[in-house]
Length: 193
Image: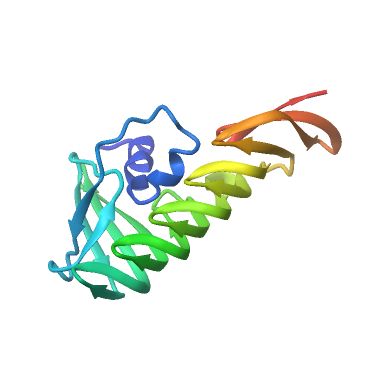
């Protein structure tokens, strides 16, 4: 039986480009074009294919010059160890790549909304993660860039400036109702009084 952690890891096939902003040490296979299961003559870009999973991609929007195009819903159905994992994107696609306003929802409960350019989060974005963690801030080519705020399930917050995915300087936060300095690490924050 597949572990819950393995199922969560496998379900991020669609959200992988966003996850890389938090886990820079992840090494990915090179991206490739994938034919749609419901229209084999139409393709979408998969930024991080996983050769260990059988994946089917469905798109209910338009297709132009052999690439998904327009607004619609993109669904990735991945099968690993007998489990079906379903990830979804609602929004715009241009020339086969996620582009424009959209929302990604993964099987593991991650939800990211924002503006995408050629598959990369760019501008203001909001990500909500399982167990109540939320990050809201600015992105440039999938990396945190500019002001960002992490809110933890207990209400503690840390707000910091980012450049090219890394926090710049000391953040300002609130822990247990007390103002403090903080550092954002992946999906958590370290506070100092």
